Length: 396
Image (cartoon, rainbow, N blue to C red; front, side, top):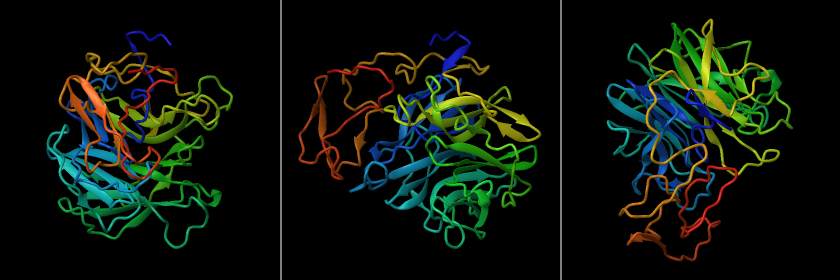
């Protein structure tokens, strides 16, 4: 699709960049994504216009930070959240089947990041941090509900106050959301919670419906960070499940949103979505999309019923920055000559290798054969970059 100077393409990060979280620091924006058992893990990006992004590092970039040994590629690090407070960047995350919830910190988002601060008293997945104006700190997360689950997919969002230094709980955890908007309708997979304070009210945003075509984003409101939270009647605030399945060039499965406010006072949401080639089949992974957020009486909205997520959006009214050396969306070609003594940041292996299966020499990438196959839970001879186009060619 043609794009004018006042427009930009969706997704803003094409390819396997799911579960985005964003934070604004002065005129700069930083964004992180899930990476599961791929290593280096949790890519971190920088932008000043919300459109042109440059990868500046990987949060998990030392072999001793986490242990992915024996895990399948659907485990590992899920849904990181990035925050900034008091001159420090925080990423809170879950290492599924490899330690649980943890926090890492840095004063420079490009790294180095600290060793994990483990959170053994906080279970479940999808934790997020909220720094309130009064100095109190809270952690939200997805976990099992109180008592026995009533049905498959019955989960809850919990919240508790924690110590600002150790992140140990200093209050009992309370259920902010039980099941979803309406428990009688058996909503599933309430997850990815984020808390914001807007005009004196606490706005809890969470994904509901699972990460497939029924995915959505919902909003609940409270006067206190510990609730009680009341669902807004106009939910969901983001979904594509109400659209015809046979529509042309669909963007589907949208949800897991995080909000930011730009320097002009406008609000934006980053969220995951997919571009299937048929049904629910797609080969570019779950990608990061951008949409404006409107507010009405303290309630945010990304899409109204029947709205289609567009492939082209109007650019934010921010000073445009030069395009990144490595494009992350749209039509482009890319060549890696392997002229440096380290791999570029976007190259991935699977799990954390005890020893490298490659070497860089004289402008060549040399892979050493190993006995483990790509589908094994071991350490295969594997390096890859994300597929970012539905129609592309790759060669060596």
